[in-house]
Image 1 (tube, helix red, strand yellow):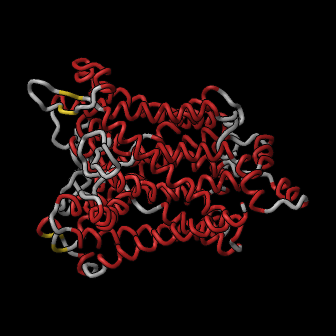
Image 2 (cartoon, rainbow over the protein chains, first blue to last red):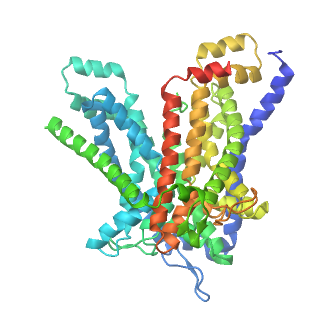
Image 3 (spheres, rainbow over the protein chains, first blue to last red):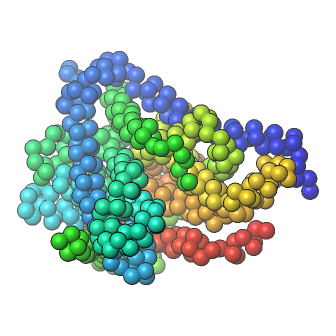
Amino acid sequence: MKLTNRYRDLTFDVIITVGAYFGIAVLILILILLLGNSFPALSEFGLGEFITESKWNPTNESMPKVGAVAMLACSLMISIGAVAIAFPIGLFYLAFVFLYSPKWMAFLLRRIMELVGGIPSIVFGLWGLITLVPMVNQYYPPGASMLSATLVLALMTLPTIIISVDAALSSCRFDLMLASNALGISKESYFWFIAIPQAKYGMIVGIVLSLTRVIGETMAVVMVSGNVIQIPGSVFDPIRTVTANLALEMGYAADIHRSALFTIALVLMLMIGTLVLTLRWFQPRSFKGE
Amino acid sequence: MTRVMTKVFAIAAVVICIGTFVTMLIGLINSGYQSLSFEFLFSSPRNFGLEGGIAPILISTSMILVLAILFAVPISMLTAIFLFFRCRCDTVQTRLILTVLELLASIPSIVFGLFGMLFFCDFLHLGFSILSGGLTLALMIFPTLCLTLFASFLTLPNETRMVSESLGLSRLTVARHLLIPHSISGIVAGIVLGVCRCVAETAALIFTSGYSIRQPRSIFDSGRSLSVHIYELAMNVAGGDANANAAALVLLIVLLIINLLIFAIVDRQPNWIRSANH
């Protein structure tokens, strides 16, 4: 067998390079198709109406309105709410894993979170629909509300946050722990004042990435949020997010309505893309995985 | 003070987390197990899924899954190998590719669904079909799979790499005889994780592989995946809760098996895989 064939190497190089540019081609294709399909709505209403108007009524013959503000605001509110609920709980969960549990229990607690992280969003949605919504409904009808959506999303994002923050905390320098032990610093103080400041960057990355996941979440939100397009007056009001609107209306939308839906998909994608790029901008110059 | 508070809150957090998830699981099992039977798995749905089983749905799901993995793995492998050979030189090219992969990984699945509808169903005239669904899912898992494969390639010791370069081995040889055998456990784990994401996906499939509950005859037929079936039963069929729960239970059991598989592969250093590959 020849192991050092230069000609073959060249062919192989060409193939892997083509493979490597596949991702870029896909991204460009997605952008072109979305832009192309949202062009009719964009040229009729302009981007301004999408991001300033809050009424969504694209099928109205005389006065079509395509404002996405209410949906965008709801998407952002429930996502930030979910992460704000999940992060402290996750942090204390990890405090237990790092500080108080014996080795086997720490192993078990981590494994449980990895398992829960694999539960599909549709199952969370189903649970929310059958259990959580009736529960909220008893006290504050209608039950399918911003609160239910936020709670289900918080539950869904908990494993993601725990796993990424765990990775960030685990990569802390070991010698600092030894030093703090030698100085007689309690393990709680070590955790809060030495480990967490060290892992700050990794934790922020984890939080923002889970935020992008939560914003893009569709099925669970469709099932528990009540699907009324409005800016909610309280957390017990039903809402509809951008992704939910796409899933609910794309099936029957036509013409300008369809085009308007593609536009809000584009807006959503740009929003998430900006978040990811900002994160990458602040990232220290080294590769992931190293 | 810090000590007591930390301990109290930490225990509370663990109790809340585990408690909620256990309640959730018990609730699902409670309302789903009556409908779950041998017959449920192996018969066709009748009356919009209110009666009968999920056999054709399981078949469509596995067809979509196989197609997605079949398309996603080779292309991710190429990208990951490319990144591995170029990653030491921090060039514009590698940074661009990594950034694009991260961007792709962050795109919501519903947007992938819309893209699949526009590109595969309309532009390539595949219609609502299992093939469109599989291709869309392949694109969806591609970026994550790439990054996972790349991360597992990076575990190849630097010395091995340098020795292979000093011997003048061709890159194809390095990839085939060093890289892939060395990181096979990571590769398998990455693929299995991709399988998990495919099985769990709903939003990307609604507009690409359709709702049909008939037995699919070929990959050009429309077919409903298990998660879409759960969604339909829970949202659009009155009284479909019991069967939705049963289907969810099936989905969870499948995912549990897959997950246990990952643990078996990743945790024990897989000597058997390696010896099989050398």
